[in-house]
Length: 159
Image (cartoon, rainbow, N blue to C red):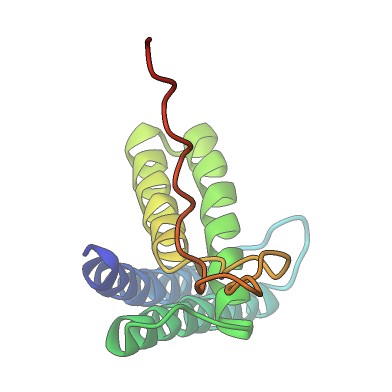
């Protein structure tokens, strides 16, 4: 099965993204702070602090998504409840980031975001729950032999 390896790959990729997003935003905050840059009259200290806080928050979000994928890989059970919602939101975020990447950065970054999106969707779909038996269909018919298959009528003879 591909379920566990996909979950491991998704966990590793999301942990890597968490570190990368946090590091890039922290670096941008340091650059803004050292250059004393301002954008439309905004205070540089506020811009630097908000970039660092945003990077940490976004990095923690991806790390938590990676933790959900890691737990799925370790337990070999589908994500449930909040974890499933978190992975669905991560898929939506990667779809939006892919759209922005196509317009602002180029096709290699778009391709990376689409691959991560596909991995998350594959993780969610491979652990999708199978529907049980339909409640309207009785398992054992009364008066029968316990639900044995119905034998077809004999074919008409050619006489």
